[in-house]
Length: 249
Ligand code: IPE
Ligand code: IPE
Ligand code: MG
Image (cartoon, rainbow, N blue to C red; front, top):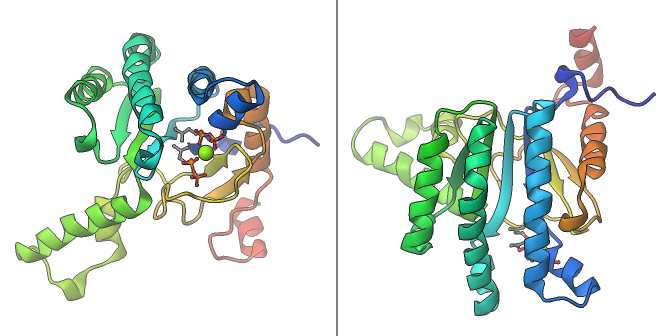
């Protein structure tokens, strides 16, 4: 039987996506990589709208990794320009739809203009609660763990508690997305089966879904397939299958 993904208890609360394959999508069409990134923005818009419609309450998107600075200069600057333009264009509608937009990652590396726009988007949408959209930009999972460790170390240095009393909770609370439920479903498009330094800490118990579909082609049917995959998983969190079925039944 087809799983009923319209039932809200079957829906992931938090979906995290590595939107990969823009460059190859463009190459297939003999176009410049940038055309792929532009088409990728369209796919992103559709998936955000789908989350709002279905009631997925948190969506985290990998837009630019800390390693993506190593790409050709021209591609990086075109990507930055695309971020600026897309934010400007989409923010009003996102706000109208009740989307709370936030950024995770080291924003200090971005231009003053982009930083200003990021801050403005966050301010404008901060009280919205239909969907929390976290955009990972200049983000790396190792960066995240490092910045969390630094915050915790500062507390220890300030005498708030002793290093011997450090718990997982201290680190968890200092990580990006600490106030959200951890991702239930991870999606990577574009065929690669790797995490590429995305949410290393937060993905500990996330269900992982990989598809060969290139991001600009990832439409609502593809998203539906990923959600259906999720509803078929048995999430055991270290327990036995029998324990899980007993709790549910
Ligand atoms: C993902 O698509 C977008 C970003 C990393 C910004 P890619 O640009 O990595 O596309 P491929 O992997 O080269 O096809
Ligand atoms: C991961 O994709 C980063 C984003 C989608 C923003 P990449 O295309 O950069 O990952 P690798 O280089 O194939 O691991
Ligand atoms: Mg890629």
